[in-house]
Structures are given as C-alpha cells and as structure tokens.
Length: 412
Image 1 (cartoon, rainbow, N blue to C red):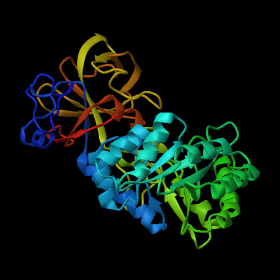
Image 2: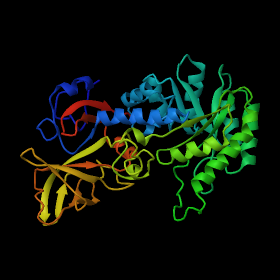
Image 3: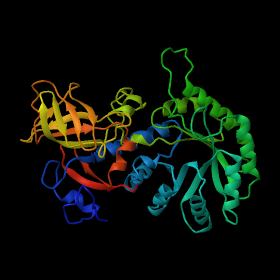
C-alpha cells in the first residue's frame, strides 16, 4: 500500500511497511513540515491501560473507531482484547468490514436508503462482520424492519437513551418501552440492549451536594435498562453501553448500582488510544492530572512538528502550522519542546503558548529574550485527538526525538 500524500508527495511512492526502514527524522530533508506523528509506544501503552481498566471492572471495550479511522490501530485495540470497534456511520462500518473487524457497533440511528441497503446486503450475504445499530423511534424500527425484509438473519439493535436538550435517544421511559415492544414484534430486528452517551453533558462541580447531571442521566439509563430487560427474552447477556473518554469511571460506578447478573456493560471510549495534551488529559480518569497510582496511566501519543518561519516581534514567533493541520475545537496546540537548528532540544514552559491559528500560520507567544528563531522546529501536543487524525491521510510513527519508525494510514 503506497504512502502517497502531503507527507511524502515529493518522493517516489513506497509501501507503508517500508517507511520505518528509510532512516528519516523530523527536520531532515526527507520529511516535510508541518507534520503530525504518533508515538507507537504511547499508543500501545494506552491500548493496554484502557483494556486493563475495562477488564478490572468486568466491562467489555468497544472503542470508538471514528477517533482514528486507522485499521492498523483497530488491529492493536482488538489484539489488546477489545470486544468490538464502534463507528458513527455506515461508510465507517464498510472500512471496518474491509479490514476484517469481526464485530462493529454503529452508534447512531440508520435512516437513509443507502445505509439500510448496505445493512440488508450485509445480512443477506456471507459477510463475517457482526453489526449492531442504534434505534430511538417507532418510525425508525418500522423502517428498518421493512427495508430488511427477506433477510435470513435478524439485526441486533440497542435502544438509545438521550437527555433533554441533547441529540439522539429517547427522552422518556414510556417511549422506550413502546419502542422496545415494536422491536419485539418486528420480523428482522432483535433488542440486544440499551445504549447512551454521557460525554455531551456538562457537569456541575461547585459543591459536593450539587446534583450531578452525568450521574442523573446514567441512573435514568439504568431505570430504562431494567424496564426493558424482560422484553429481550432471547438475549443473553443484555447489553448496556455508555462511556466516552471523559466519564467512564462514573459510568462504571453507576452501572454497578443498577446492573443485574444477566447484563453486560460495554464502554465505547475512543480518544484514549491517542490521549492528548489538553482536554482529555484534564478530564480522563486515567489522565496525568487525575491518575497517579503508579504512573501507569494514559500517555499523549500525538505530536505536531512545525518550523518557525518568522520572528516579527520580540514576543512573537510565527509557525508554519494552522487550522488545516491542527485541531482547535477543544483547545489550541500546546508547545512542548523546541529543536534548534544545531539539533539541540530546548524545553518550554507555560510562557510559551499558541495565541491563535490561521489556515497555515500559528501565533506562538514567547517570553522576552527567547532564543527561538527562524528554522527552529517546535513540537506541540494537541487537544482533542478526534479532530487531529482526520486532517492527515498518513501519520508517521516517531520516537520523541523525531526519528521516524513507521507509518499509519487513515480512512476518513
């Protein structure tokens, strides 16, 4: 598979498997900048750490593949013990199927003719991938049942529970029961469990006695799970799925309070595999700011490398890096180190910060007297990895010193 994109456009195509043998390093004439790289040791650490956490809490892990859309990374997650890969769209499901992922959770409602046709073909054919999808309405259930007419296999569905002002998912227990009964009466669907997502809820942390909306939502999910369990007579275990990358510890705690012996928790965390230097490091139960039992927590795996192209003011450096290259929806990139033109590395502190991004320029604030100069290279961490991978067709894997060890292809 050739690695042809902006990272290698000036070179003859080579196979991804050959990239690590080239002797490339960040800052050499072989590698264009800006560049996003992935620390493969940190990624493998994160796969193991999160899987261990799930195992310790008797949860199955179905990591959200939309974070990376990188089948090479899916394979590492499955090798570590993941039960399934989660996706958000049918085209993402198709990528998983093409690369042999054995089980996929489509964590959204399926509504279009194209998507239901794909599911129908998947159920009629000899495809080996097991698929589970979400439903949240009687109309949606009836539509699926009609469009899957004649399929020899039934499609497992999870009834999604939402929250007021949120996105998809039922709002009331009575509605959930009515939809579950509609599934029960359908010919081509089977109710496999319930699902929800707490990651979009803003928590209130001012006082311990203040109601926590995340916990309140998960308790409602538990109420509905127990109401629907008797309607899924032929299902064992009854699946209960939640858990993004920020509050999965609360999911585990609340699930323990309402679960019965024939239920199984499935966590769908996704950002953990790359972690970050921003929002998730602050929020994750396994991030560096909250997890310190043995230092065996998640590690930031993504690094952006950008050259300094201008020093127009005493306290300003301009980097060749912008919104086309870096996520910015949940925090701007975080300066980590500087590689000087002589090859030496210099640490940076909190006085170095990105003020803003243009399409291809980053405004780096530096302290007075800073030695950062034109042709130096700044290494930066990212905030929100889900918005980092989709900007790059190919990511090089690299050591912290910038030496290139391999390449990973994304399929967005």
